[in-house]
Image (cartoon, rainbow, N blue to C red):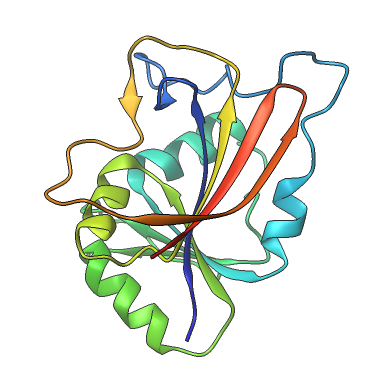
Length: 176
């Protein structure tokens, strides 16, 4: 069965965006050292990406407005807004839990949960995230959008890998 993987970056104090919803702080401690290539390795086993409207809008309007960066993946955007789906981008008005359960039953590679925090919280509350690949950025924001908000119960994990480069620490956990 397909695995559901959260692949995301956060500040050292646990935020995925600053107080103004910006992510321009993402990156290592030195601009000339590079930020590793975890994404290229990760994406080899992925064919589906799930995100909320705010994440979609940020990618499409700020981070990569000239081209959709997930061209080789089927993207699902969970939204209540009326949008026309394309071959690559499917706009769905469906709960994250039902969507992910449906996708897990289909054939394919693993499923990437790209964001945002509300979708992640809903999937965690149902135990639907199998693997957590988190890049910890060497920045303390102080406030913003937390990756993990309040959960109703404990979510035990098993550390499977640690990598570090340019001040960034990648931790990979699997659900126990």
